[in-house]
Amino acid sequence: MTENKKPKETDAVLGGQTTPKRGAVLGGIEGLKQRLKNSNQQERVIALQQAVQYGDEGLKLVAGATFGDKCELAKADQTPPEILALLDQDPIFRLKKRSEDSNWNVRSKVASNPNTPPEILQQLARDENTNVRSKVASNPNTPPENLQQLAQDEDTNVRQKVASNPNTPSEALQQLARDKDWVVRSGVASNPNTPLELLQQLAQDKDSIVRKEVASNPNPSPKALQQLARDKYCGVRQKVASNPNTPLELLQQLARDEDGWVVRKQVASQPKTSPEILQQLAQDEDERVRARVASNPNTPLELLQQLARDEYGWVREEVTSNPNTPLELLQQLARDEHEWVRKEVASNPNTPLELLQQLARDEYGGGT
View 1 (spheres, one colour):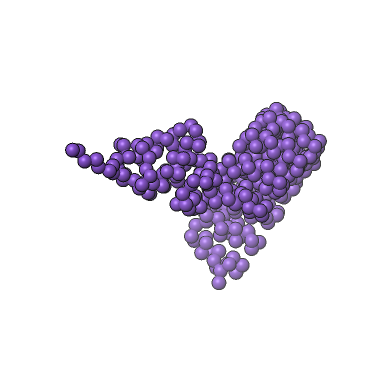
View 2: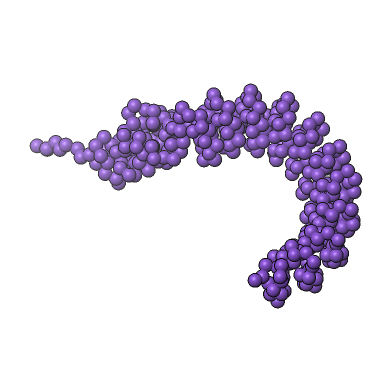
């Protein structure tokens, strides 16, 4: 008579090498992994609850689960305490708990955290506190659909943050470009992903601050820049002069700006300003413009020689800081009547050792 043996616990493991604890599922750990690929979230959560039966290997599966599955796992009544303890150690899951804190300041910090996942940001986008929603509107992980929702927020600051977010969809930007508050429109104007046609529209905005943001944007069309280069406000023209994408012909025009030395100074500072324009600006009546020419790495040698003899000491000082100033000019400026000019010679990385030694003996050059 054949004896009926009680089946071993390992008999439940088909195809698995890990010896599970009591209650293991058919198919073992490999079977569990297959069940985690199920499209039904409820089935995946049940499988994760059973993963604890496989010790550390099973807990690794829990740790690698999606954020959504972890949330459902935490809410489920049958989830073992070992898994709940593991979830408490998960940094993303901690963010989830803090996102539900009664203190708005705690929720605000979660909303601004660059590691906060979209699922939590989606929840915080509906927060009652405007500071929290404002942080969500700025977060690079916020889903486009939530940014679209926040673009209609009653709070101006929230809408402004949406307008500035590089991930805001173009439909929302179109809406915000017509916002009644200039601060919101300025956010659209500064956004690097704002479409060209919107930048063209905002280049004609009634508020000069909005137009300044368009002039600073890296992507306005040549037509928009040309229009802004003739703006009645000096600050707008200055931003055009500092824009790295402003074409040379516009820089030439702005170098002759009669109403604002700050505009000409900005042209003199531009890395792309041509030697011909710098030649013109080296003769400028305003010493602040000439000083910027003196520090520009594109300034030709003959202009550096001219500016090294400028009547204003701080123009000569800028010559000493130019990386292209030759040794003979550094030697000349090392004997300058003004102490601060001589000190700048000592700061130039191209100043040779013997000249540094000479300056170290200078009564006013910092030597002892």
